Length: 289
Image (cartoon, rainbow, N blue to C red):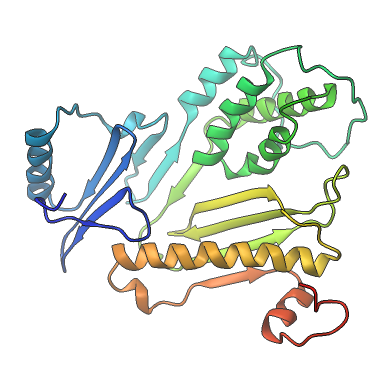
């Protein structure tokens, strides 16, 4: 990488970059796969020749990178999806002909707790969904996170929940992430329920980061501590959102020279949590946070 004049990102050790006033070259590595992006054909080809001199490499297209399809649209936007992967797992787990639904989670909570841990490959099924939820489908992240929390002893209701996720994918297999040119604002949204997990009384944190009008980072997971109020749950979620925002700003400031001067925004939808972040005065209901 040094030979090619690329710097190693301090925010992500698997990302290398080179930027000038009118050109850029980015190279990301994932195990034995790499993705190269640049805006100058000559620099791009020189870098690929340098790689060939050092390693035995094969070239591929954006049509299938780690199970993702990356398409450049005529308007300059980029669309990332996993339609082929979704169709593959639907066939693999015999859900290709299932009746589609529009949402991955049902409003009706089943009370069927019959142990079906030996009924089928629950771990394999959820594992395939976890990759999808982490790569291009933030809309199923909450449902998949909930399904992953009962890996050891899934009940009948958990299998039904997983099937619903597949039914949702059946009708939304062409969904993905779209990024547009010209929008350089970074926005992070944080949210939380309160004691949503009935077994542990822990709350769930939800985070989503938007850049270039598309989702670039997201998370849905149980909080590590038990919140005693909605305000506390929201503060914990906001803390996670702030950490993600700080990291993303550091990363984007390296890749985009003018981004360091911009101010990203963290959005919180709880009035008490917003007041508490602005005024950290101690009082009996929040001094323990």
